Amino acid sequence: MRRLQIQLARDARTSEINIGDGLRRELGSYIRNDERLKPRRVGVISNRRVFALYGRDVMRSLKAAKFSAVEWLMPEGERYKSLRSLERLLTFLAEKSFERSDVVVALGGGVVGDLAGFSAAVYLRGIPLIQLPTSLLAQIDSSVGGKTAVNLPTGKNLVGAFHQPANVLIDVGTLNSLPQRELVAGFCEMTKQALIGSQSLFEQTVAYLRKSPFGARLRATDELEALIAAHCEFKASIVAGDERESTDRLDRSSRKVLNFGHTTAHALEAVTNYRVFRHGEAVGYGLLVAGEISRSLGLLQQEELVALREAVQLCGPLPTAGQLNLNRILRAVKHDKKSLGGEINWVLLEGIGRPKIVSGREINESLLRQSLQTVLKAPTRK
Ligand SMILES: NC(=O)c1ccc[n+]([C@@H]2O[C@H](COP(=O)([O-])OP(=O)(O)OC[C@H]3O[C@@H](n4cnc5c(N)ncnc54)[C@H](O)[C@@H]3O)[C@@H](O)[C@H]2O)c1
Picture 1 (cartoon, helix red, strand yellow):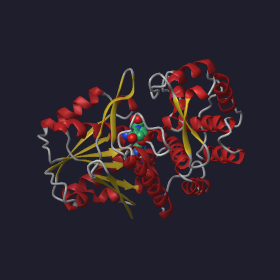
Picture 2: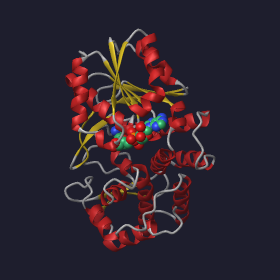
Picture 3: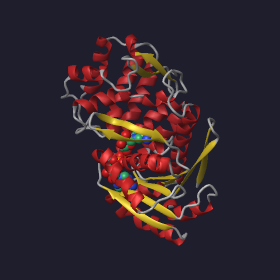
Picture 4: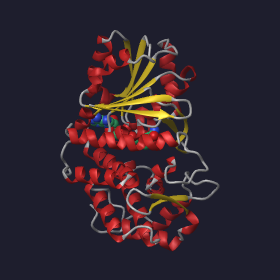
């Protein structure tokens, strides 16, 4: 069992992160023992699949701690992270007479976490939130940092708020039931964080990946717990220094570095109408492309590029991408929503653990085309 705290300098609020096996069964006592929380009601927000697996443990623990617990389940899938779902959820909270001191718990992956988090941010202008993430991506990334959002038909995550959870309870035991593709996607996001984090985070991550053959289920070992804790610590360190992703910051500790691999990933998702890749899988390709560009600009050493490639490979097979039209991908890159003032900023690497934000003007079209070609048309990817 591991415990971390994120102290946000701005107003000294604290978010606590607890990591261990079986924490879902302790949710009730965590809330009871947290002096900042005095709920009468607890709303557990989840989807049917995750609730069928873990809902009973969670509700039991809340009832054992004498809370009035109610659940609200959303359908599964990114397209339900919408304003419509938000309205339904807010209406549910209102109909159940939730008050300012009551608590919303997000039990699920990043989709549930973002929707439930946003509802907690805006219901009665903000009520306490607890994240109980159950996917690998949610445990190392989306549950930490306070970003919440829903999608619009025009784009992902366009409406949202920053709302720090009072507590993040990471139950590594829930990863055991995660489908294989979700694991690959989560590992790719983990590799992203490792590459921009530090040499030691990278080595720890690769060592774990080497011991996790594709197809094996994740077991709640001490090594996995330590790895997830290290990733949360890294994410928390970035968030604590730049909680709201300042638009004018381009330094190595700015929250923007978390977009490493995402310029290409967004383009791949857009040209395939979000139907071919899990987001993390697209990030896997994005890391490879950013690695190629970094090497071509002389920022990254050849052996570091080789290490990056090996790490992505260890994450597992990615959907084939060789059939995609390069011109369409190039156009989509130019329209990436993360561009600022019409200009794209690329996150590149000048070494493992040393991200660098580089203006898109320094990356000419032929370099980009060449890098995409090298990565996407590589015959070795399954
Ligand atoms: N807020 C942030 O900072 C942040 C950061 C990164 C991503 N996100 C968001 O996170 C979302 C992606 O999250 P995700 O990858 O967790 O996807 P997801 O929430 O769709 O979960 C992936 C799938 O796994 C299932 N699942 C989750 N936990 C399970 C478990 N323990 N056992 C079996 N099945 C399980 C889900 O039902 C779903 O089908 C996106 O909407 C993205 O925008 C947010």
